[in-house]
Amino acid sequence: MAGDAVRLLSLSGLFPIYKPKGPTSAQVLNQLKGQLLKEAGLKEYVKKRKQTLKIGHGGTLDSSASGVLVVGIGEGTKMLSSMLTGSKKYTTVAELGKATDTLDASGAVTAEKPYDHVTKEDLEKVLPSFTGEILQIPPLFSALKKDGKRLSCLVREGAEVEAKPARPVTVHQLTLTDFQPPFFTLDVECGGGFYVRSLVRDIGEALSSCASVKELIRTKQGPFTLDEHALKEEKWNISSIAQALQDSGHLLPAQPGAKRLKTE
Image (cartoon, rainbow, N blue to C red; front, top):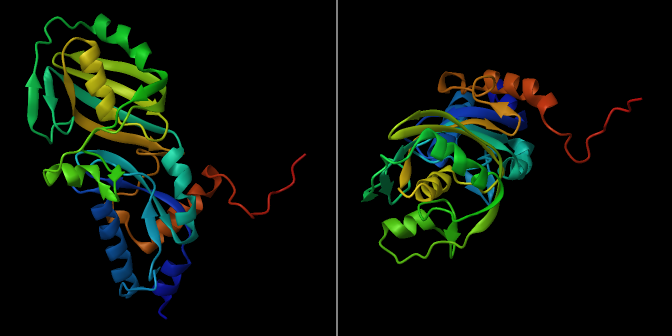
């Protein structure tokens, strides 16, 4: 086996990449995997559930969103569940007075309501009610599944789909950073299973109007930040990823079975 192939197949751990707006998280992951296999001179095969290269991501980012996507490679794929449940940070630009079926700008407009009555003070006054442990109804257009099929796929196929029941989610921090009607910008820090699109919908309703997401950027996932750690496409190569895995080792909790250094 050639040197690059040996290096690629020995990579193990978690590292973050930059997902651009447009493709799905799965498409970005497939592109990354394809580039790595090509560089190593390997072909993809799946035999008895065994893949040439074990790779996965730790939490879907909407196709219309951009930002940090944490990738697990090799044994690192077993650590991805911690990314799903861990803390995340987002910056979102929302638009008052417009509701869509997807709860963001990619969907069809389903309602338009007046928003002239909404002030910056009104917005700041409702935010505490969306902070802490809250109940949230997930969007119909989401990666959640019914009978093994994604809700978003079922909706697009014209199937009758009921909204999932409200479920508990956690918002650690919620800050209004800009208000230029009809647009407002929020910084959100939340736990797993949280949907910024649902948050914006609910804020719009709380203000006796409606609202949808115009832009969404994930700025942090777990210990990885967009500015400091996320690898852009030009660095989706074996050497850059090996370096990223080495650099991120101290950011992650020790893996089960790993020996801990004794400290006084």
